[in-house]
Amino acid sequence: MCTVSFIPHQENKFIFTSNRDENPKRAATSLHEVDVKHKKLFFPQDAQAKGSWFVFSNTNQFVCILNGAFEPHIPKGGYRLSRGKMALHFFEYNSHKDFIEKFKFEGMEPFTFIIYDKGTLLELRWDENMLHQKSLSTSELHLWSSATLYPITWQKTRQKNLEDWSGVISRSQDEVMDFQLFEFPFEHAALVALYGDQVPEGLPVQTLSVSSIYGGSDTFNFKYKRANAVVNFEKSVVLEEA
Image 1 (cartoon, rainbow, N blue to C red):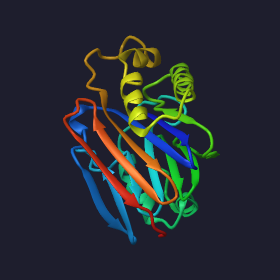
Image 2: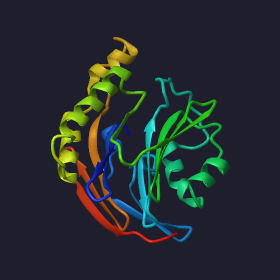
Image 3: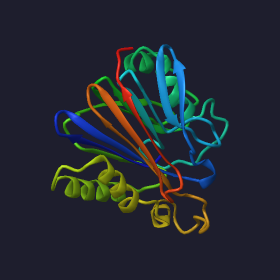
Image 4: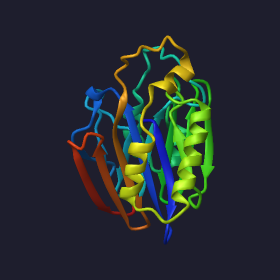
């Protein structure tokens, strides 16, 4: 749930890619498929919480969740719903507008939520007090990093590195996945920069995997790759109207 990019591609297509930095016990092992409100949902499932950080559907929609909003925070516990379960609940609503209007955000832990809804790209940030909504251009490159894992300076450096690398030539989905996996791995030094020297040295967090969608108006091509290459899977989904 931590470094995510949206890269415009040729012929009005795009590459959307998410690194997941987590405890290895929460690594996904397969692609799950469920039916919700006449939609087919696909997602790598968190092995512990049973939700997901990245969910897509055959209705030209996907969502991706990152921990934290704008600033690092200390979890309080007792939240009403896990953020990974919220990602699945999104598809119970008719549209992103319906979700924003009707979903109960109160009681949720801070998050950044990226929504792609039939050509509309949005960023939602919940800071425990207010929902911040931002519309984004699908013709521009975007990069997000978890506020609980990376300082602003690291986020800006990673965006500059991605812009420089992707701007040279048109990159493939596999190239973007490998770039993010090897150039944007979790680093303990980022946590020290955020929280100081009290961060435990043996904290069980690492870059577990990279997930990606190569999308357009008619197809989502999804790929998942574990950092250790033990688990890989992919899915091509023909898009339909909800």
